[in-house]
Image (cartoon, rainbow, N blue to C red; front, side, top):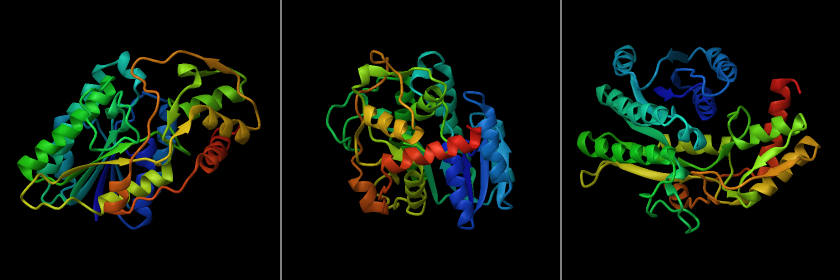
Length: 326
């Protein structure tokens, strides 16, 4: 089976591609290697994937229509697509909004058009985000909750992707599943995320920025659990009954909300060093708490997260020390 993975040099895309290769799939990895964060980290992930015979790399921008059309001509045997390429980050959307409509809206449209050109598409799985819940105060967040009041452009583009997918599933019977990720962390993570930022600053003795004066809670989800959920979902496409569009949306989180301060505490233990904390007000577009209801995700494709932050954080630190020689 040939599976296309967009964002293959990214954090989640790299791990998903490895698992697919390990189980004997042929993987076509797509990435534009943009400079939103350190390109050398993306290149290091990519080198590991390119050591595998069943991995083919295509460097291109998913929002480039002509490039995506040519891609479908080169790889007509693709039957499943995992679409993880996106412009990530809530705060960056405040300073570079056009990057989000380009990558997340136009890019998602081009991916769906790519899927339409395939002879057989069994399933398109794409990354949404817990950010779509906005200022929802009902916990845990359920996919039945309203998500029409986003508080960041990033969230708005992710919600747009869900709506676009439902439309294409209805019009063209393209089976699609959106996964709302909740604060993914672990080895090979993104440098713009809290764990990476905190680790780097603590090691050099700089204060770490802690927003909302530390009164923050997140459903921290370890990368191995996320990947297991993505792959299991891929293997279980929605049924096309003819009565409704073959489109679904699920939460994919740890089903456990943890305080940011306890997360920092695990980081301090793993590093053997206390953090100097700079308490700051809430940032625009941010939310105080996230918490995933995963009942449907567990019921429909057996998703069962297993990794606590007491295990996941030290695993990240071990990778960080090894990769950066700290």
